[in-house]
Amino acid sequence: AGVRHAFGVLSVHNMPLLDALARRDTVRYICARGEAGAVNMADAYARIQGQVGVAFTSTGAGAGNACGALIEASTAGTPLLHITGQVESAYLDKGLADVHEAKDQLAMLEAASKAALRVWSADTALGVFRQALQLAQTAPCGPVSIEIPIDIQGAVL
Image (tube, rainbow, N blue to C red):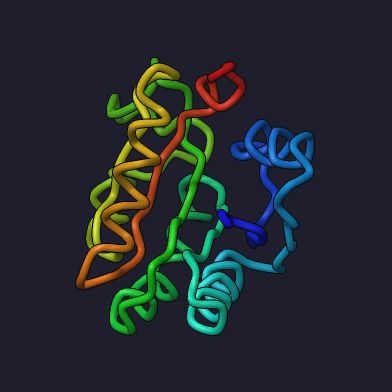
Protein backbone atom coordinates (compact mmCIF):
# COMPACT_ATOMS: atom_id res chain seq x y z
CA ALA A 1 0.00 0.00 0.00
CA GLY A 2 2.88 2.39 0.71
CA VAL A 3 2.99 5.60 2.68
CA ARG A 4 -0.31 7.49 2.70
CA HIS A 5 0.31 10.09 5.43
CA ALA A 6 3.35 12.12 6.47
CA PHE A 7 3.76 14.67 9.21
CA GLY A 8 6.16 17.55 9.52
CA VAL A 9 7.24 21.14 9.82
CA LEU A 10 7.86 23.17 6.67
CA SER A 11 11.26 24.83 6.46
CA VAL A 12 13.55 26.36 3.88
CA HIS A 13 15.72 23.24 4.30
CA ASN A 14 13.01 20.73 3.35
CA MET A 15 10.86 22.74 0.94
CA PRO A 16 12.02 20.91 -2.22
CA LEU A 17 11.07 17.58 -0.62
CA LEU A 18 7.64 18.80 0.43
CA ASP A 19 7.06 20.43 -2.97
CA ALA A 20 7.80 17.07 -4.63
CA LEU A 21 5.45 15.33 -2.21
CA ALA A 22 2.68 17.80 -3.08
CA ARG A 23 3.22 17.34 -6.84
CA ARG A 24 2.78 13.56 -6.53
CA ASP A 25 -0.49 13.99 -4.64
CA THR A 26 -0.37 10.42 -3.26
CA VAL A 27 0.65 11.24 0.32
CA ARG A 28 -1.40 13.44 2.63
CA TYR A 29 0.98 15.85 4.38
CA ILE A 30 -0.13 17.00 7.82
CA CYS A 31 1.60 20.07 9.26
CA ALA A 32 2.64 20.08 12.89
CA ARG A 33 3.45 23.10 15.04
CA GLY A 34 6.82 21.70 16.07
CA GLU A 35 9.26 18.95 15.19
CA ALA A 36 8.67 16.87 18.32
CA GLY A 37 4.95 16.97 17.59
CA ALA A 38 5.52 15.86 13.99
CA VAL A 39 7.55 12.83 15.11
CA ASN A 40 5.02 12.04 17.86
CA MET A 41 2.24 12.18 15.27
CA ALA A 42 4.15 9.84 12.94
CA ASP A 43 4.86 7.54 15.89
CA ALA A 44 1.18 7.37 16.88
CA TYR A 45 0.13 6.87 13.26
CA ALA A 46 2.56 3.96 12.86
CA ARG A 47 1.37 2.30 16.06
CA ILE A 48 -2.33 2.66 15.22
CA GLN A 49 -2.13 1.84 11.50
CA GLY A 50 0.58 -0.81 11.69
CA GLN A 51 2.54 1.01 8.97
CA VAL A 52 5.78 2.97 8.85
CA GLY A 53 5.36 6.50 10.19
CA VAL A 54 6.99 9.38 8.30
CA ALA A 55 8.07 12.74 9.73
CA PHE A 56 9.82 15.67 8.04
CA THR A 57 11.88 18.23 9.95
CA SER A 58 14.35 20.98 9.19
CA THR A 59 18.06 20.84 9.76
CA GLY A 60 19.99 21.85 12.89
CA ALA A 61 17.71 23.00 15.69
CA GLY A 62 14.71 21.51 13.89
CA ALA A 63 16.32 18.07 13.82
CA GLY A 64 17.39 18.55 17.43
CA ASN A 65 13.83 19.36 18.46
CA ALA A 66 12.77 15.96 17.08
CA CYS A 67 15.22 13.96 19.20
CA GLY A 68 13.07 13.44 22.31
CA ALA A 69 10.23 12.06 20.18
CA LEU A 70 12.70 9.87 18.24
CA ILE A 71 13.91 8.39 21.52
CA GLU A 72 10.29 7.65 22.49
CA ALA A 73 9.67 5.92 19.13
CA SER A 74 12.90 3.98 19.55
CA THR A 75 11.96 2.84 23.06
CA ALA A 76 8.53 1.77 21.77
CA GLY A 77 10.02 -0.05 18.76
CA THR A 78 8.04 2.02 16.28
CA PRO A 79 9.04 1.74 12.60
CA LEU A 80 9.43 5.35 11.52
CA LEU A 81 11.30 7.37 8.90
CA HIS A 82 12.53 10.76 10.05
CA ILE A 83 13.53 12.79 6.99
CA THR A 84 15.45 15.96 7.68
CA GLY A 85 17.15 18.60 5.61
CA GLN A 86 20.80 19.49 5.71
CA VAL A 87 22.99 22.34 4.46
CA GLU A 88 24.46 22.19 0.95
CA SER A 89 26.77 19.24 0.30
CA ALA A 90 29.78 21.49 -0.23
CA TYR A 91 29.48 22.77 3.35
CA LEU A 92 28.87 19.46 5.13
CA ASP A 93 31.23 18.52 7.96
CA LYS A 94 33.35 21.66 7.50
CA GLY A 95 32.36 23.29 10.80
CA LEU A 96 31.51 26.58 9.08
CA ALA A 97 28.30 27.13 11.08
CA ASP A 98 26.37 27.56 7.84
CA VAL A 99 22.71 28.54 8.12
CA HIS A 100 21.02 26.25 10.69
CA GLU A 101 23.95 23.81 10.67
CA ALA A 102 24.35 21.68 13.80
CA LYS A 103 27.87 20.77 14.92
CA ASP A 104 27.41 17.07 14.07
CA GLN A 105 23.78 16.52 13.20
CA LEU A 106 24.29 12.95 11.96
CA ALA A 107 25.87 11.86 15.27
CA MET A 108 23.03 13.55 17.17
CA LEU A 109 20.47 11.65 15.10
CA GLU A 110 22.38 8.37 15.51
CA ALA A 111 22.11 8.80 19.28
CA ALA A 112 18.33 9.33 19.11
CA SER A 113 17.44 6.84 16.34
CA LYS A 114 17.99 3.20 15.50
CA ALA A 115 20.20 4.45 12.65
CA ALA A 116 20.98 7.69 10.85
CA LEU A 117 21.87 7.84 7.17
CA ARG A 118 22.89 10.60 4.79
CA VAL A 119 22.06 10.94 1.11
CA TRP A 120 25.33 11.91 -0.57
CA SER A 121 23.99 12.26 -4.13
CA ALA A 122 20.84 11.88 -6.19
CA ASP A 123 22.25 8.58 -7.47
CA THR A 124 22.32 7.09 -3.96
CA ALA A 125 18.99 8.49 -2.71
CA LEU A 126 16.74 5.54 -3.55
CA GLY A 127 19.22 3.07 -2.09
CA VAL A 128 19.42 5.07 1.14
CA PHE A 129 15.62 5.15 1.42
CA ARG A 130 15.37 1.40 0.78
CA GLN A 131 18.02 0.76 3.44
CA ALA A 132 16.24 3.07 5.90
CA LEU A 133 12.88 1.36 5.36
CA GLN A 134 14.44 -2.06 5.82
CA LEU A 135 16.22 -0.99 9.01
CA ALA A 136 13.10 0.66 10.44
CA GLN A 137 11.01 -2.48 9.87
CA THR A 138 13.60 -5.08 10.93
CA ALA A 139 13.45 -6.28 14.53
CA PRO A 140 13.99 -4.55 16.75
CA CYS A 141 11.97 -1.96 14.84
CA GLY A 142 12.71 1.70 15.38
CA PRO A 143 13.06 5.14 13.86
CA VAL A 144 15.66 5.75 11.17
CA SER A 145 16.74 9.29 10.35
CA ILE A 146 17.77 10.37 6.84
CA GLU A 147 19.62 13.63 6.14
CA ILE A 148 19.25 15.12 2.68
CA PRO A 149 21.35 18.18 1.78
CA ILE A 150 19.30 21.00 0.28
CA ASP A 151 21.15 20.90 -3.06
CA ILE A 152 20.24 17.22 -3.55
CA GLN A 153 16.57 17.58 -2.60
CA GLY A 154 15.55 19.10 -5.93
CA ALA A 155 17.36 16.55 -8.09
CA VAL A 156 15.43 14.30 -10.45
CA LEU A 157 15.63 10.66 -9.41
